[in-house]
Image 1 (cartoon, rainbow, N blue to C red):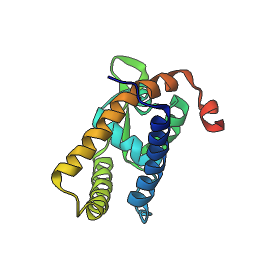
Image 2 (image 1 turned 45 degrees about the vertical axis):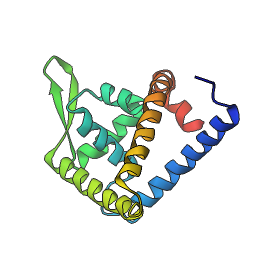
Image 3 (image 1 turned 120 degrees about the vertical axis):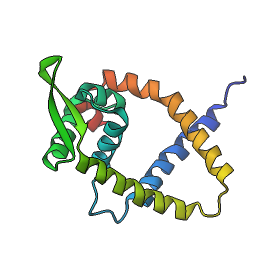
Image 4 (image 1 turned 30 degrees about the vertical axis):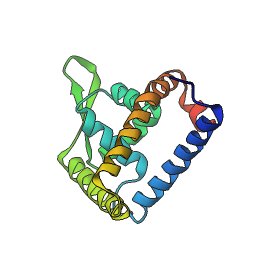
Length: 161
């Protein structure tokens, strides 16, 4: 396979950045009754991952543990996450979505799905499937880099850069 030209990669990186901002704004606008993006992201990945230690979730989210700990604390306070002792290590704990958290996640997904579907009403099923494939391939290509960066970057470096 031939190498991709640097200008093409630069344009792709710019487009992905702008798309991420646009997607977040388009799908989360007018959601004051739901969760902020950061908390919704934690809830989504915890539901996907299942009961786990916060360190596992932090690695999955490419976040430092102290940042994630604040989010988990807020979600516990709101009743959307349960924190239980780890039966294998009483010094540690496991987190899992509560039924209320799963209900909130379902409400968020329903609203965002409805908003996105309205914008894709002139797309075919095949076009949406193609877009999904490209996004999944990009995620698979970039996830190892993000995970490595998260493992070596402190929370302070993340907030200052």
